[in-house]
Image (cartoon, rainbow, N blue to C red; front, side, top):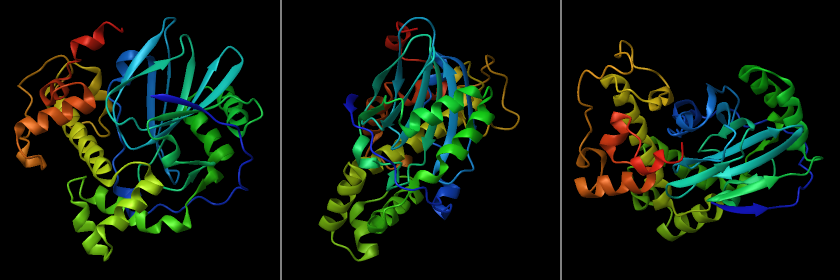
Length: 316
């Protein structure tokens, strides 16, 4: 992930956030399954604020940690406090498996914005931080001011409330990207398994118009966005399978809704069931495995079984 230091610009005057759309109601929370195994005191909670899917927090150990992160089409706003100093980072989606360095012995509070939220998060657009990290280190920035209030609270719920009160008015939708918002909604409805030519035909646009508008506002090609959306859907399916099989793993905590009656972790009762690639819209099983391996660093069976790839273990 590349670093991008940007000057802090005055924020636009607060305006009411966009109302929750139908897509926002059904869209699952994107997951980062490796986080809980690499940090301390990991907590998360869903959000009912427009434009935000998840709040989460954690601490880092006294040594350098590099956490494997996977593509999720999201923007994460990460506040970190070390001593009395607070920094904020806008982290865009990676485009393949990457290792994200965390500051040692530091407390983090993080906000994951919805994948179908286009336009502005403060003065940051989705396209500005694809595969990028934008650092807000100015102690007079809005993020730093909110961050200091956040860490005065002690619980995740209290910090989420502080964030909503102090920053919640800065979600703005671009009026000129309505076309792309419709396209993104179609992609999420199809769980990423849709051809862009079909979307263009449905909305009576040319393929070239859909392509150019998508790249302009999202910062990646529509095909790659579809692939990442489909990948996230599959990861959630495999994590749900981890619950059902009772595999002993930290991944299980990342499922949004634990399966009722699932086995106790650590007592695997059966081999996890992994769907075939053809069932999930891939050309064949080889294509399926290569895609999941590229984005997650693990095979589908490793994700469903909750097993870390061995080359990650040296980092812990």
